[in-house]
Length: 79
Image 1 (cartoon, rainbow, N blue to C red):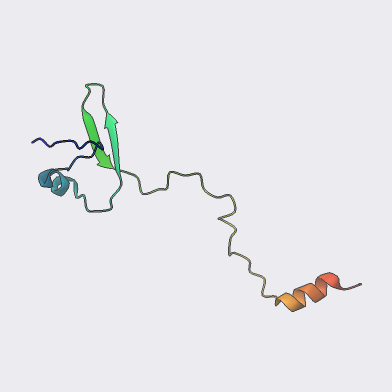
Image 2: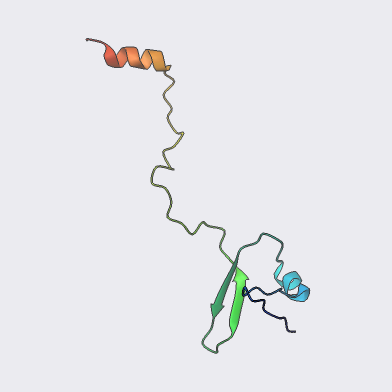
């Protein structure tokens, strides 16, 4: 089975291969070259590749039920 690469380096993955791997539009793929020089194609991990935001775990997690006015009154009190 062969295909032609465009000037942009794009290729169409033949339908038989897409079906065999369960590939659907929008799926992320990883390409690698093994020791024999063969190209290996597999579905990429679904985990994001970027470094996680260190504040993301804490974002939106406050359990304090204070109203802003009540909290500001408490913080500004002279006691």
